[in-house]
Image (cartoon, rainbow, N blue to C red):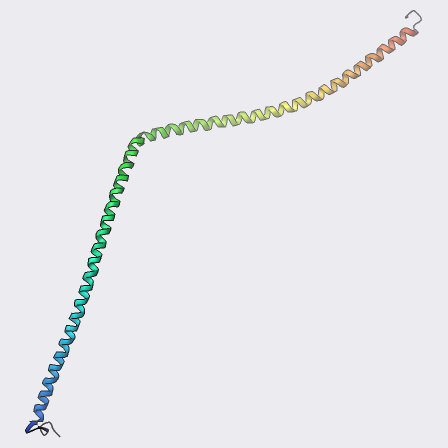
Length: 177
């Protein structure tokens, strides 16, 4: 069965198959166009909503950016004030002459270190002298003890000598006593 042989009867009108094919073809083209237009408008609507949402977000971001800008400006102003105060403090502290003072201080520290070295040497000599004095004191005390012993021995010897002379005088026939 060919398309030319096909015929549809609608009431008293008879429609040939070629016309049916043409109508279906136009109908499907128009339906496809309507569907494409509908899809296009749906996408346009979505894009429009996305643009509105992006605009709202952009406005919020602009407001936030302005807030941040104001905060940063306030911070920058306070930093500038702090920096200005530091510069004044540096000028007041006379930092330029500080180098000379530091050099002088370094020289004084070197002299102090030398003097401390000399004091340490003197301390060592004093410690050595104290040790020598201590040893000498021990020797002197030892000698004093032996002198006392010697003195006692001499006194005993002297007594013994006196006793011997007394005994000799007592036995002396020539008249000792």
